[in-house]
Length: 170
Image (cartoon, rainbow, N blue to C red; front, side, top):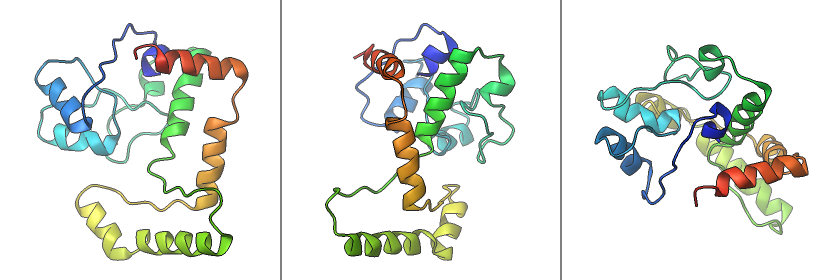
């Protein structure tokens, strides 16, 4: 999606088992770059093996506050803005816990409260900060709304474009 937005001729390489291996490919010169979360990028940038070029979103990264956003670095056309905003919106989902739709409401409420309590624990949050791995609890309703927005609030043309871009290199 970033390549589509920035009108770059990219070849997406599949087959790396995870972001660590894909980032190692960049450090070895096997690939030119990688698009990844700021959390994943921090270990390799701290060691000087890689550097962050830009944040592909409207807000600067908490982990890389001196790195400009793509909106600060470039003048983007409407199409590029849509792609960047869509990808950033999908990325806000982060890591979410999902259940089957038929989980009884009482059980779901217990699960949601347990997750909220666990991820709001001061000791866990402090440990995350110490490791530079921010832990932020997002409530279930906000996650549901974001998911609906990312998946359902698309025109048929937007769905077709996303599908063509995502499946292009597979």
